[in-house]
Image (cartoon, rainbow, N blue to C red; front, side, top):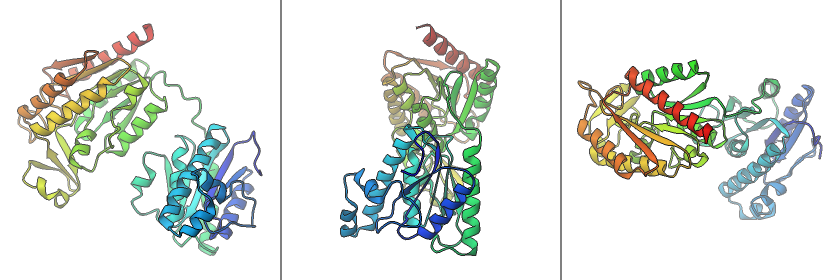
Length: 413
C-alpha cells in the first residue's frame, strides 16, 4: 500500500495495461502538487511497472466474483468493461467510506471512460471527479447520471505521450488538485435545507416559495425537473441532505409514462417517502410531456396537442387517460411515506400554459388527474384543493405555510 491510512488522497484510475506511460505522467504531476495518490488498475490485459499500483485489476475483478484470467479467456470486451466498472466502484465506495478520498481522476477512450465514470458513481457530491476523455464532447448523460463529474476533452487519443497530451494531462492534474484543495462539502446537515423542483412553466411559483422560505431562514436548493435534475434531487434526499421537500414540479412522471426526454426513471418521488421527511407535493406540469424538435415527436403522438416551447423543445398535452394513470402513480408513491405528506391541487391550472385562454387549458384532463389522486391517496396523506393557479402568489403562500406546518409538527413529535 503506497498511500497513508490517515491521509486523504486523489484516486487515479484507468487501464494501466495499455496506457501506462500516460498514467505514470499523470501520477507524477499530481505528486508534484504535494498530493497523495491511490492507484486503481482497471486494465484487463496486464499491469505496469512504471509506478506502484495499490489495487490491481485482479482485485477489481474479484469484487464482482471474477478472476482477471476469466475475463481474459472470455474475450468479451463489453462484459469485461461491466465487470471492471462494478468492481472499481465497489473499491472506490470502500475508500470513500473510510474517508480516504479527496478527489478522483480517470483517463481513457471509450472503455476507460465508461469504467471511470462507473466507479465515480460511488463518490458523493462535493468530492471532485474529473475524466480526461476522447468522448468528452459526446453525450455521456447516461454514464454521468446525476453526479458532479467534470469532463475534459483529451483532443488526441490517450495513448503514448506526445506534446499535446502532456500539456492536457498536466492541466488535468492541476485541475483535480485545485478542486481537491478547495472548500470541501463536509458535515452537511439537513437542518434548514429545503429541496424544491422547478420548470420554466412553474418558475413564478418556485421563485415566490424560495423567497418566502429564505425569509424564514431556510436554504432552498432548486432542481430542474429535466430528468437529470429529478435524479439528482432524489439521490441527495436519500443521502440525507434535506430537512423537507417542496416538490412543485412532478412533470418527470409524465415523461416516464410517455417516453419523453425528461424522465427521471421509476424511482422519482420515492426518496422523501423512504427517508420519512416532510413533503408538500404539487402535480406541477403533469399536463405536459417533453420531446425535442418537432420532428422527433413519436409518430403515434403526431396528432396530439403539441406546443413548441422552444425550437428544440416540443410539449405534448397529456390527456385524461394518462392523467388518471399519473394521479394513481403519484398517490401510491406518496402513500409509502413514513413522514407527513400533503398534496395540494391548484384547480385553476398546473402550469403556465394550463390556464384560461392558454394552449394546454383542459379542465377535463386536469379533473381526471385530481380525482385519481384523491381516489388513491392513503388516509394519512392530506389532499387539499384550492381555486388557484399554480403560479398565483397566494398559492405559493399556501405551499410554504403548509410545509412549515409539517416541519414544525415533525420537530414536536
